[in-house]
Length: 331
Image (cartoon, rainbow, N blue to C red; front, side, top):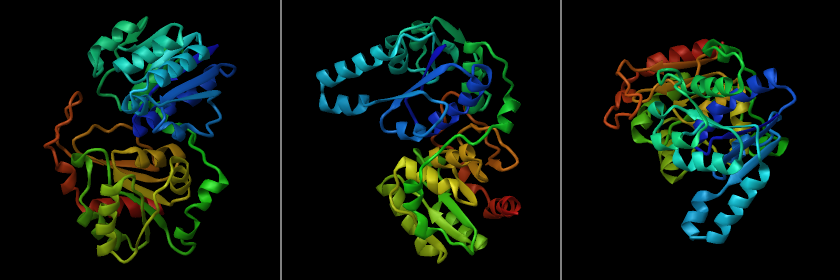
């Protein structure tokens, strides 16, 4: 059976969707799996043994270049990969639904009532109304399970195996930052939206209270500046260099703990089986907490369809609550 999964972005959602791969392998061990992702995020899928073929699309780059020839080549590459027995769109947008259609085969997706761009559902042969109040990781695997006809319960995600992998060369990029005589804790202070960020001064106090080797990762200049603010206020903080996705996977996978907001690098810890604390305010809890992977969510009601950008409740999570949970996980 040939299966294609379409989830173009973002980094965190691709990671959450990848949890479905081991369930596919459990029930359909001999199938062939292709994943289609945006080139900016697709390296997160590198070295994943359950994927037979990875297609990295550069739609955003081609749009900037106004390259019709490049766009046609992307179309030919997609069309030549199929047809498939099942094409599952985990993204739920018009561009992903068109991508699924080009791949060829029976297309599955979310019902129009539970996706951002309802018109995309017109391009699916079969849709499923997976409840919005389920964590995103559960929703993605539930859609895959419904599409392929195997059983799945949200609690099944509590026993998933680590599914992100890197190589020795990727690990070497951060060797000198990890200390053998201290706990190595990765902070993830930056996310894609300001209302998901825990304040840098609170991260600095958190670093001092923990007293371990604190490493900060970042993905852009604004996040690097935030990391510098934290490092300027806490003597036990080191700023990691700008890492590739494979280097980031390798760094998180060797950490003792990761702490951050609702964003890709924090989800990497969950996917690597590394202890983590993910902080939620305006966004719903998107992963299935485990004994090692815990969440702290504010009491503010969350809008499941459109996040409230004025909800800054995450900023008020007490450092003491995070430290208490961190010490429990570090034991």
